[in-house]
Image 1: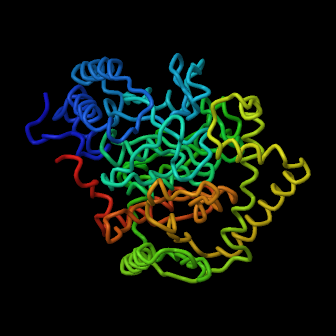
Image 2: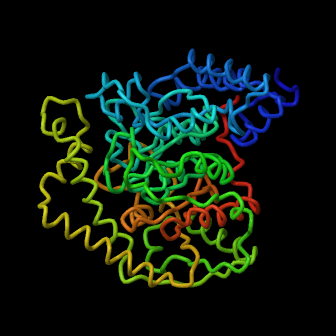
Image 3: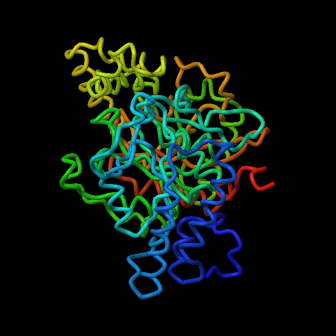
Length: 469
């Protein structure tokens, strides 16, 4: 039975929802019903999901309720719902990878991360939209549909990609949290445009087994949530070695939760090089400067840093993803009859034209830039940048030849970890975002800095206006 004080479970964070269920102040059945009712009301307007599993979610909620009431709770997230990006296999379910050409693709396996969440008693609500093949930063998809960014109900604005539906679902409170994947910014870009917290992990931290690949060497799944606390809790469930994914072997992540609460006093945090400010809009820069001031007030030292390369220089190595995407999707993109978006087909075909010698030269350049980054960051705990140079733009203004990932792609190319979190609003009420980038396998540090920001500010607590009217 729902506690009378919990009039709307969808207003709770994922961690709060888990606590309420564990304390038996809220039934998992009531929690799932609240989310399904909200989805039924708002999904026709927002278009976040490609598939809903309402009947199965209700059955899982009933089972969770009985288990908890009988003293068989699995853990602190038992009964908490989650949404999955439509790249993540669930055996027997359709997983399209955002491609209309794969509308009938039925999964034959279940992804490791899905098994881990279900193993903790979490309840899958459904699959969320993605850019085709997860290869695009604005969130557009001409055949499967472009979700509506809930921060502007009058103008169809970019939700961010490629994890567009996950961003919209969490921002609109259609799910307490969701899974995205990030190869060039695809967790952080929708987090930025939709006012969320999104964690891009180091390659190998979280298994990619059972996830349709874009770039097998760069893909990283990650949590998209309303707070750093939620992101850390889901990261703890998802991460760790997986014998089905060789990149994870031997990598044992540190528990981020104890470190997260230490604050930032004494940390040295770098502001972005001055030249990188060019082209960033005034509201984004103003929010960025306020974030630096907050961290300085909390006891961090803000220092200058420079690199022998620009973020755009690093981004040019992203053709690695195109080469690897073509390797996986060549049968579709080489078929002129396949129902593919022109922009994504063009990006993937760019990989077909890359010589093997050029591909390996890009891989070598990655290693050089990574060493240069490490040297420049010596004695510095994290690099602070905006996540995107603008807030969400109208979908009608999108130029598919220009991607919004200038501040995100270098983290993938250098195999770093990053956290995006809301840090302001434009005059029109659209979210802006701060990005915290750390060395490989230092997710706990990124979460620590982000948690300190969210303890001192309340940008992450806001919801898009007009959805409940």
